[in-house]
Each structure stands twice: as structure tokens, then as C-alpha cells.
Image 1 (spheres, one colour):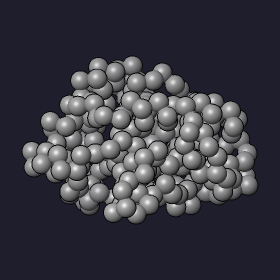
Image 2 (tube, rainbow, N blue to C red; image 1 turned 180 degrees about the horizontal axis):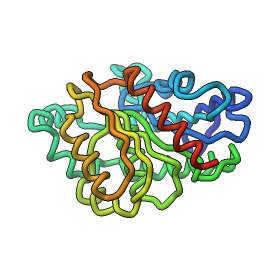
Image 3 (tube, helix red, strand yellow; image 1 turned 180 degrees about the vertical axis):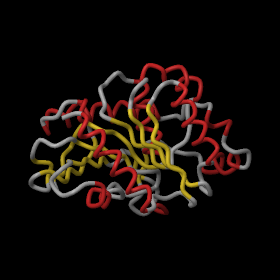
Length: 239
């Protein structure tokens, strides 16, 4: 594993020919969720691709959360009390808003990608971007609000945010391959908002590979298997 500071973010780089991002394989960038440690998604590199075939980058979010979260980090802060109150109504009100701090988080991820691509010698067409929960929503925002080339987008347990802006921007990403998964019993982010995001992307012409699973806010084996197949597919199409 290699640790690099890219765009002001600490990024763990693994996989490839030497286990530290070597070689010329495609790159997958995965953003962790709110409250998770920076290395939370690191184990996915061992199960999403055969050794040496794909390189992975795992950026740590810039915000350190208070002591009750342990080593938890965040891409932008969440008003937990307001979130819990809004969740009783299905979070639809919050899904219309642009969260405070989202713009800054997006700028840092874009800066990180700008430095990661030349470091690993890879073009944007061979970079898949994604994440889990808050990381999934940030990934979607980056894809929709920038014109940077991407091999694909992986959205694990993320939902619709910034509804007016995202819906307006989606047609500009028509044809982009997307893998999206969500638990039908997710207690944190409503399944209905994930389904709305799926339907909106599909209507706008994005190529959505959708997986609903009978679980909660998690990444079960069936998600890993389908995400792995998705990465093989988009990776081979960019060779």
C-alpha cells in the first residue's frame, strides 16, 4: 500500500502489479461514508478484483468528527438532530437541498483526481468513481457537476440529493455506466429515495445496473459480486 497526499486528502493506493498502484490497469476510486474511518472501504480491494488487475484509491474525508465517532471522518457535516427529525418524513425535504460543505468536498475530490491520474499514469476514461452512503452521494455529485471523463460510477447505499440541480444535469451524463445498490430495509437512507435516483438516471439515459437486496445500510456479498462484475465490464470496455 502507498499513502499519498493528493488534493489535500490522504489517499491509500493499493492493487496493481506491486500492491501499491503499480502497472497500467484501470483505477477505482472509492469514497467512504459519514462517520467511517479513512480506511473503512480498504478491504473491498481484496474482493472486487483479482490481484494485480485493477488499482484502487481510497481517499480519507477531510473532516475529523468529535470523539464519540472514534476515528470517524466526514465529507461534510450532518446535523444529526435535524436528520433524525427529517427521517420521520422520509428525508424528502433534505433531498431537495444542497448540503452545506458539499461544494467544498466536491472541489477536493476533483483536485485529488487531477493529481491521482498523472501519478498513476491513467486517463479519466479508465477511472471509475464511487463510494458508500455519503461517499456515494458525493461521487454522484462529482460526476454530475463536472465534465471529467469516467469509466463508470458506483453508488452503494446512496440516495437522491440536490434534486433540482441533479435532475437538470443528468442528461449531460447520458450513456455513463452506473452500478447502484440499496437495501430494501435501509433504516438510515430510505429505499424510496434510492429508487427515485435510479429512475431519474435511467430516464436521463445513464446505463444503470441496479441491485436491490433484502438488507439494511450495508455492503453484502451480493453487492460485492455485482460490483465486481460491473468493474470487469467497464474496465474491459476501456482497454
